[in-house]
Length: 515
Image (cartoon, rainbow, N blue to C red):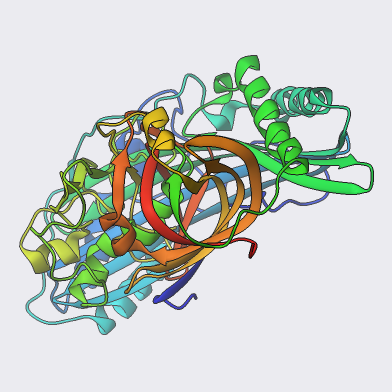
């Protein structure tokens, strides 16, 4: 588990894999003997309960045991997850894997206490034992009587023409091979190409103590192209990836060409790049991928658990100005097919578009059910967990800054000496104070209001809240990054999206060369 006050951020790595090709469709786990639900239809609660081999009587018994010692909130979170990966290196398939995971998490909340237990065994005795464990951790008040189960409907932000469970491994190989060939054809200096493919689906069944029943089927896919190039004795490496809650039809030839070009362009420009001058400089955050800085250095400070505990610098700033009036920051779970989209969060709350900073004023935190009760507000549909093994907490989904009143050209022309930060690879953030260090893989030098040279391998250092206050211009070109970002917090990882328009921060410390 990571230290919650300090985090290391890395762009998600390639999927773990086993040697040899494995079938795309896994065998059923014990307890899944009634056949899988029709993947072409929205999950039906009764069919989904049958998939997990539970019925209403079983649910009532487990919930009664879970709430026998009192509860303000309680839920059962069933999850079936299937994933597959393929890796091609040097034109050969080197690894492939399929994995299956299934279980249930049982949670009871009493005041600020949370009792949590999970089991991979979905038999009634195992679930009752887990329920007793959770109830022994958090308890108080009277038992909760069972109530009738009521299915709840929600919007579907990521319907697929074909679910991944129906896509054979043989259908995944042509896009992988095609991307490999496209990348090699981009430049004769390309020496090595590695293509990493991943797809997954999760089937979710969530039932709370009020009898509300929620189901969700969550697809995901990512394709990654990593390139190594050589010129003379110099070697450079770069990569690009695309990710979304999409199906195999998303991988058009146009998208594969885009990914190959992006990976190779990012690599080849490094042969021309140099390190910029060091010192405190204006930094232009490029549209799209620079959203990582917004997510890490600012977004985490707006998650309500850090504020409820008083560890975030934003803990006393609701309703106060935290940025210029042309800055609006949003966390949104409703964008169709985005990696950070969710139909419902992991507490059964429908996702929404949450405005965090409204024209410069801190308008809301990112809430789960516990923090919403503490602040006496509605939850924002942001209670997320990595799997049934984890309890939910306030997490970002798709975090971005909206477009502003300026243009990209206008911003660049205003900078006499500074840099553009274009692609980020990793960094560290002190969540409470918001202090950060980010490593920039690709960028550009600005001199006299013009882009003059590519730059590489530099750090930018600053403070998130201070950087937000020092935003002086925001362009009208807001966009989400196309890559597959994964956010880590307290030992849990969840998929997210992020983005930003071209944004000028008047001063940040740049770790370049002393001149």
